[in-house]
Image (cartoon, rainbow, N blue to C red; front, side):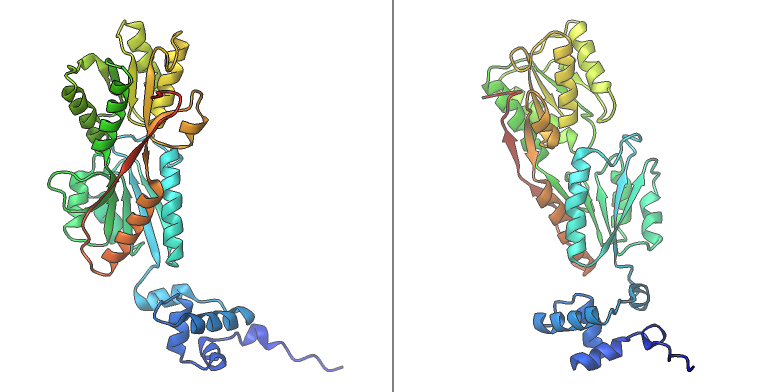
Length: 345
């Protein structure tokens, strides 16, 4: 009995030249089409992709990227010099990361997440020189303003999620945090509140602009700022709850809270109610971000909404422009006050 001739499907896999022959185009056209190049007409691109799919052809991305000196990867780095225990499961970060990941995937790139819990002055330069990615998005300035400036002075394809700072040399994308602080404070004053407590890391970039909006709005209404009504608290853990509880127990009088984030706001509400007070009847509360917590909380949370989808899309769009050599300017996105039960009109 004669053995069957081995199948050529395994020993002679389809090559790019074969796809080109079947499609009636050049191999370079096939290469660009399968890379998603907009320079190839959509009809031609669709036909080539259909042939490739029919024959089980898989692009050898590693080999192609090596030839082009590209990784086809975008790195999203999170420096945590200010908050070493903060997790990337923070609701705001998860939403932002999701929108960025979608925008990167639409451009046929992969995404690499790097969490840097103990950054030193050269952490970002080392990361860039590792050549693990073609472009870098840094989420939050943390306490790394100088490190970001240092890296930006010699590396263009980098964008930072955060507020514009003095002497900034890098491109940033962030919300109008000052306006957010103004909106929150104005709303509380307009509803009759005069003793407004601010809680959060007021010296941290972005939060410092929220705090400045709060301070300036008090002044415009002729309300003196009482230092006892500014309470520092981390984004993570039970510190906000404990600090609000301690303020109430020690006799600090306040009729409203403006919190630096929705998570801190929810901790404040729990502390208020655990102390026998009511929100908003005794103490109104406004948060910042408009995460899922704001809707799920009881009472539901009045908060300053950041357009996280626009932020993620803009970060990726500007990065890809900078990867093409375009020195893009920074962008500030508008914010909006969302009124719910914790601080009604």
